[in-house]
Length: 157
Image (cartoon, rainbow, N blue to C red; front, side, top):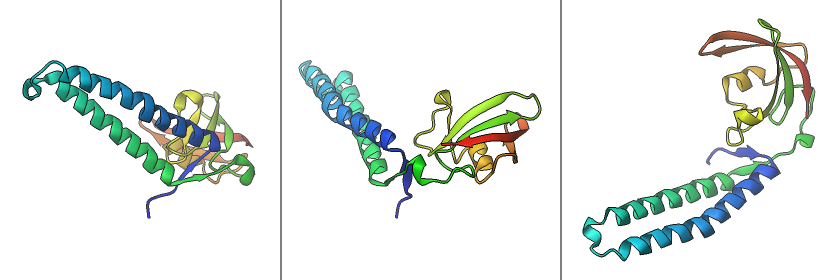
């Protein structure tokens, strides 16, 4: 059985909208490209036609991959999880012990990770080091730049 993918209800909705858009708008655009390329005549030496077919294959693979992901989704809500330890969907405030800087992250599934939005994957080095920790614990993270140590200041939903 394929691995379960944990996602929030909001992320599932986003993926469903993305799939719908790819199926409707994306397929329509590809069909127009193919029709335009066909109108140029000889398909055996038509690079534009070959490129449009390649784009179609990429689009269909993306749709298939997204649908495959959705077929394995288990929707989770922060309200279903305790907030005494770091789990998936936990918001955590960290203090970098070496320089005193403060960081806020939310731990999410790899499919929802977005570093710019401060959402890090539970499978990332930071996520793995934080899982199961409680307020006051220290986490050692081995990164390309070397070892870093963080103190967990707050845990919330």
